[in-house]
Amino acid sequence: MAQGGPNHAPGDRGPGRAAPARGGVIAVSEIITLANDKAMVSISPERGAATTRFDYRTPDGYEPVLRSVDGVANLVMAPWQNRISCGGFSTAEGFVPIEANVFGERFPIHGNAWQLPWSIDRRSSEAVTLVLRSDGPGAYRYRAELVHRLWDDGSLTIDLVVINLGRELPFGLGLHPYFPRTPLTTIEARAASVTLQDEFFLPTKTIATRDRPGLDFTKARCLPPEPINNDFGGWDGLADIRWPEHGLGCRLAVPGINRYVVYSPGAAASFFCFEPATHAIDAFNRPSLADHGGLVMLASGAAVRMSCTFCPYSL
Image 1 (cartoon, rainbow, N blue to C red):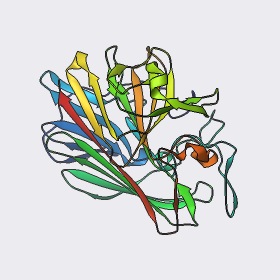
Image 2 (image 1 turned 180 degrees about the horizontal axis):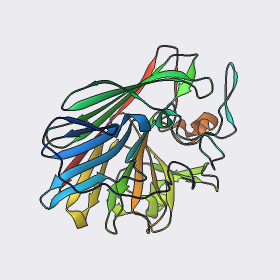
Image 3 (image 1 turned 30 degrees about the vertical axis):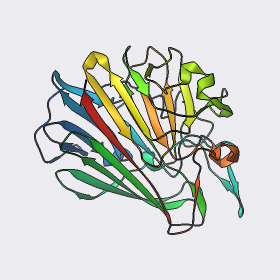
């Protein structure tokens, strides 16, 4: 996404390679770490409940599954994902203004959950639950609950639930993980369509993935050398990412979610993003993009949720 926004962080640092301690919850400098003999994951409640690290133990040592960029390896996107144009959106009750929330961005992006401190609700040696109550942005009033759970096999499940506490409004969710980008990195994620964008990173037209081979991840393929920032629809909720140089792969399972965004600044970048999402970019002002997942109108007290499991494995 555009420079200066959360998809183009000013730093580009990867996690360290030290082996994690076995078992237990470690809280150091406002970072919560879950660890076992297979993997380690760290979360920062104060930095928008961001995942800051996820490493997996391979036969050659610990390797990053998620890549820390400016200290963040995954963002939570709520109560919407990506950009909203037009300064807001219209509802049956009138126009809902939403202000830009990132310096240098002309549009509000990714909601506000990633910009607010969360509270620790409960934790154990395997999981931590964080909660957030937000009055805003705009007319939004909501409560969010986020669970990171580390399984015995080294898999990580992230569960996100958002409950509307205000008037009826459209809601959407997403996750924004950063992955290492190497010359041989491949992505396999079957989708029916891909949406092209204009110079403002807003949708222009949607085409079949088969009509744009360079953006067709039906079969495992490397990222294109040029910048990529595209929204894909008609996804089956499964993906497989591989780093042959490091003998590592990671399968993603996101049940009930049929959209994702792929972002990377280009071949020279050390990261790319694969972002599961419940709705299309700027779906608030483009209802025609709802064919493969759309915003959910939530009455007060209703909830929307998503779950993503990252399953790393040795090649």
